[in-house]
Length: 366
Image (tube, rainbow, N blue to C red; front, side, top):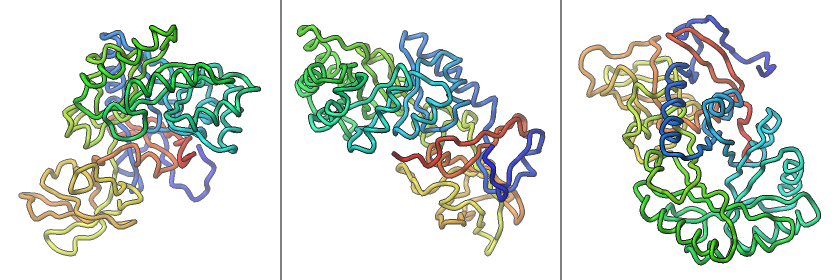
């Protein structure tokens, strides 16, 4: 636990209903079921699974994921990876272009510490920077990031992917590790075509793609359709959230994270105000028009957030409405951001606190 004399920390055995709010709480049984369900799917289809730890940022949860069968972990930034390396993780993939001397110095230090570090690149500029730094050091494994339709980072065509792979293969200090992508949902056929074509071109040139890493929670249960992939990456599934329910990947009863909040005002009969604002729920909409699902009040709408207040429209609610002092649970739109808003995460079973974990990689944005 972090040594903060001002922190309000729950204790094992406390009742969730007695906790100070706002606070995210994690249902242990739902968490375990989510891990088991996804690992069983990956095992059934012969895919390695690499969980993305940015969802929880907690080494103990990554240990649960690897104990269930996950092969390595996925981090987004060097500082996240350092935390997990210190916790004993060796097989770490960082899925972000890394540039600049300060970051490269930290990266080489990390590469010296663990046996299985891997990074990505999608340009000659990034590759050349990595090569210049690692030419006289322990070689670094680099994957080519491919844009198969997700519209974020990545080379745009199989020919560009093959060309960058050749560049990595020939660059001093680097080892070509394979391919990686983050696709848009529902695009398995396009992803398969892009990756398989690139693998074939490189194979003909004698360049092996040891890893073909497909990714993303939105594409989770399409993973088996991308037969060129050797592994899949996903993060949100461990907690699930409102966006996962909308995508059809789970139901509300599979959402392990709730944000516990207290109704602090009822200015009108149709309005409630809770103590969970943008510092607790995040302002991420992810395509929604509101800011979360209020458990037990399906017609309540969280219409707005300021830093400390959440405003809930109750006008469509029939029957009982939440009263001042009542504690409610909210399924957030996006769990990953909620994790980064809190120092600790409280876990419970049947409403009784089972453990409190530090969010060890909180705020580590580079």
